[in-house]
Image (cartoon, rainbow, N blue to C red; front, side, top):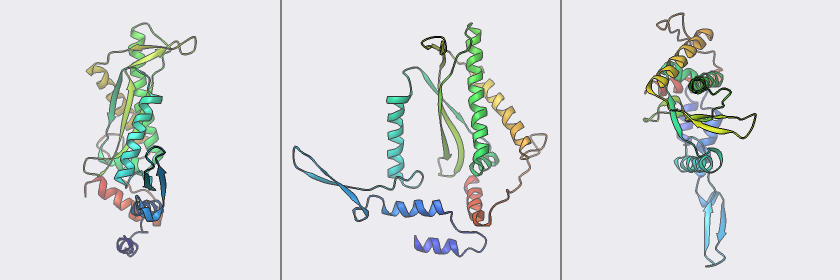
Length: 239
């Protein structure tokens, strides 16, 4: 890794790798190695000893810690977070230029997620009103996935959304009312997200007044993050 970092630091056009990337790589090289620390576990019954090496607890670089975090999160959601009602997975993917912008700008990513959530909630409440129900509350949980099947930069959203709403949340004990979504409901959510994200990009200066007027303008980047931006752009375009 030292040779790789020296090569990156020697690149005159960039500021080297970000500190958090370096730290993650260095922790990964120590992950699971007893020489870097461990705990000793002893069975009180069989008196057997087991040495468990410290892990790096990385979020994006270490496959072992990433898999462990994924399994732990899934178990916690099933056991402690998600009620026993029908759930549907919604996935929102966006064009490549917007993926890059969302990866670089956390505020933009948050705004797109908010639009997505409000569009789904609005459709569920509309279906509920058609059944004579008002004031219902929906439930969802979202994971932001930042990579595609080729490990390329591909920011997209995975949302688990309850297939229904809870009524009586304020007046009394909440009661879940299942709602049957059809293809036209999914289409309506998609169109609403598309319109609002388009207006958001126009407002932020990322688009002209029509969809054909994409205005790709490189953001003002700190000199120390030039290499990071170039890596983002290359990964998002599968280079």
